[in-house]
Image (cartoon, rainbow, N blue to C red; front, side, top):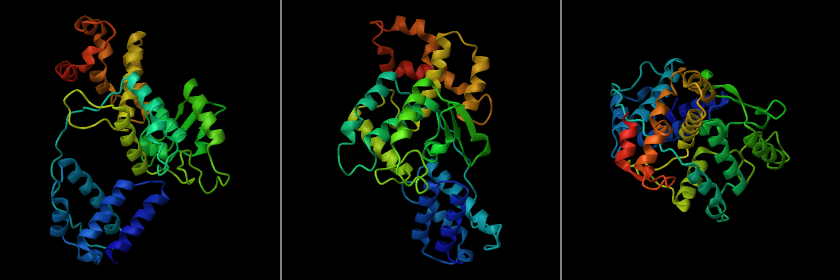
Length: 324
């Protein structure tokens, strides 16, 4: 069996189980271009190592590429298409600080208000309404983008006001309640935004052609929206605000709300982990470091103008808070 045939069969198998797998496809396609369409059993460790160590490859990219290639070769090792894994030793993972971007509520409103402008070009693949509902869905549920894009219309139960999120990882599959605002948004969108041939496109979020959205299209659309809206980081971190950061923003805003109302965080944080499909009941504890509501009284004293939120613009203060 040759490499390209092996990649096609492997990807088809992943899709059979409901995986979208865009990043894996990208890595395997790049590997095919690098080595050429050679027989699977002739691939050697040196070829894989050279591909992984390509120019301008960050540590995170190296680890991700290794993960995708390892899964691919394990698949064919189990089917006796190769006799051994042609992989170099894996580098020990380098721990990176947990520094997602937390959008303010004003920034969320600004993003929503600028969608029509960012999507005014007729070449945009996603219509204004779909972009708006997708952002509200991610912000209102803390779901992963991949979960949102594989969501089917029949996963919404408007009678019980619940959403069933299915994931290839069993612990991330779950049924969660809708808040009243999200319920109203999704119900209107569900009733009006789908093609007549529902069997051909059963997914909730579709592009202008009535096809399921891809992660690439969603990410590209959001980057353009972020630039048009002028939403950027001011805390000294090089990475830009991402669509995925809506998930982290959901968690931090929920925790801020609980702190304001005096909720028992020992009881609520494990519930938040389950709601978000996180592994481990204590996995949401790290969001406490990103919840400035813990220090509301002190922060108001630091800000010369109450309500101006100037403390959010202070990189040194934000860094101090994240290190607590």
